[in-house]
Amino acid sequence: MRKTIIYLVLCIALTSCARGCQSIDKEFQTTDRGYEIVMYSGGDTVFYDKVKTIINSEENSDGIYYYKNDTLIEVSGDYIIKSVK
Image (cartoon, rainbow, N blue to C red; front, side):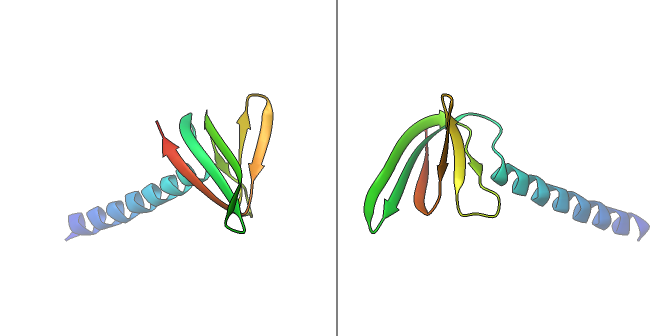
């Protein structure tokens, strides 16, 4: 009985940790990856970019940000991000 309780507590702790790590991974990417970013306004494409970089979520916003060469690019609003190789 005691082993079962210890096992159950251990499983709950590890599951919580895994969820926390997934949450951090979604907020902050740590490696470069290829992306196509398309932003829309009124159904029309107003911005398109194809990059291989790290994209991060904007805190308390619906946007993202990334660096292209030495330029900070921030995207907010209706956009689609597609991961490409």
